[in-house]
Length: 460
Image 1 (cartoon, rainbow, N blue to C red):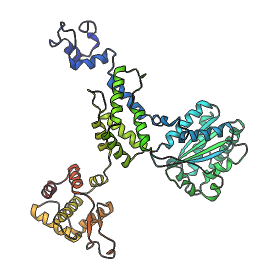
Image 2 (image 1 turned 90 degrees about the horizontal axis):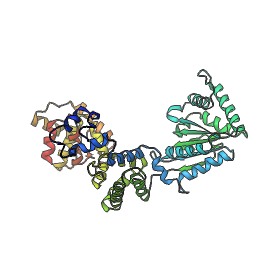
Image 3 (image 1 turned 180 degrees about the vertical axis):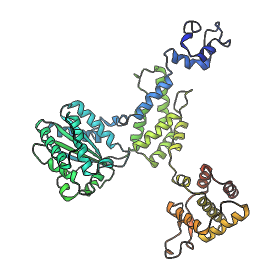
Image 4 (image 1 turned 30 degrees about the vertical axis):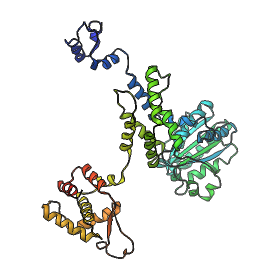
């Protein structure tokens, strides 16, 4: 049947393979290497690929991870939704701050809450989004607010309107929305940038909210925990000092997050046997001691939600498509691939002269020199040049600038500050990078001189 009926539907190279002698009509089955392709053309997709698409879609969704905490009454989602829903239903003004480190889900949780409120009260909410990186200038911010209000209420926006015209329009819209029992929600991302300068925008919004006819909520989002202390006295007196603190997940939350994201649902349309095997192997791995050690390293390095997403996405990229299951080695490889090594990153931007200085310091360290300063490094540098006749030989003043650059990069440092009044050429220094890190950095450096590898291998 495959040979004669469906032959015209396959590309030319598949037609040649299907009609080749290796696949005889007596066998009636395609070769093993064509099975997956045949399934795709026949409408039967590979369950492993479908599972990967499902898991990657979860990781790419900015809000899916936080749906795990929707049912908890103590979660920031529940607290934020209660504050905003009460402001909408009771027609009262409000202001609050969402504070916490970057990557902890402030915007994601806020988006989830706003999506739910827009479904519950579709005609009672209007959301205005501003970002301090784009709209920290008062004139730009007021114009952007007026533009979004005109867009949402089908009004004509004038690009030529002045700051006073736009301010009066915003105040008028606040009053009209209040009379229509509609709440304006202002989301100010990077709130601390709005708190710079004269703070006219914040004062205008908060002052307009003092009116009985207005109905609005101002939500500030910032990674600075002291964002409210940046406000002027006149602005702070009008701000209702509500704050929600967002923190990275705990170790127990990490386990729940892994299960929430990686376990396949039974109603996903995938074969039941494959889903059961996949979930069984995953659950066994999650309670394995070796996996918990990997999670411990992840937690100690960076446990923010953004870092967790990168870690899981990298693990999925290393999953073996033949077996179709996640393994412990996938997560171990993912952890090593996303770990940031500051010293190695700094070495990538070093000049060749700076690499010479680092290798000279390492050679002096191996020779057990008690003290090492710029003068002793220059002597070692000269010895290397004379021994290997290297073309990379620079003047003393150029080497001194490279030496100072290494100090700024904190790849080397002074031994103490007691001789701070002494000339930089005579002050003792120490190396802040290990032999393994330096050797690995030289390997990753694209145009590293061969003589440096010889010197490092000799000292190693």
